Image (cartoon, rainbow, N blue to C red; front, side, top):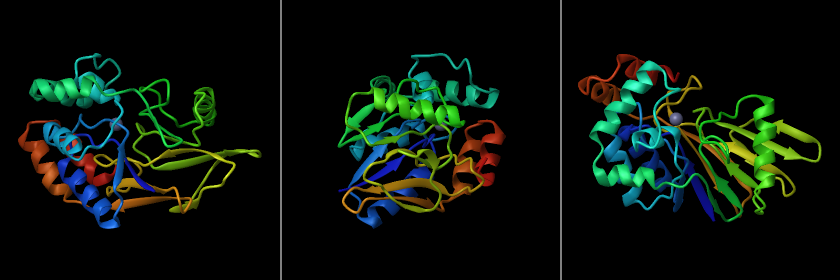
Length: 244
Ligand code: ZN
């Protein structure tokens, strides 16, 4: 069984279409989403409808939560706030209800999906302490999960916990150790922030025991033009080309 894991699409339809095309080309049938389907980008409704039509299970991201009207954009920077209020104003009732009903976490096949951390969709896993807490939340779940997928930082990264401690695992492809626990962030489809503007995702091959990160070039200019045409802040277009 192989799973493709995507996250932080942020209303970027061009990037989402390119990633799904690549996943289909790889022949991976099961796709999982870690939230932030909307926010920042010009095509929130189209992205929701594509995720729904493909039957892709998703957890709730902090932008989905605010777009659905379940929270206010208290911790959002000015451009993010302007974009999420624009998004909230143009979602159909049905799409807003879809976002409002997204679960905070999904557990399946010894894996757990969350947006920020298992217990907090607003928390980033960045510092060594965050990573330790991330593993602690995973162990406290009481489910036999070996892999926790999280998004929110828009930076692809992989951590392993084993009897020697917690380590960052480098490399595009990793062999999954039998006795290890893993925290895996696939990076962002629609707004990468690791300096590489290409859309990011990962594939977990359960049978083969590997986690592989992928990057996909997409039509950045198409999304930038849609952002400008929508009257959204120009920085949101600029940053897509920078991968920041
Ligand atoms: Zn995000």
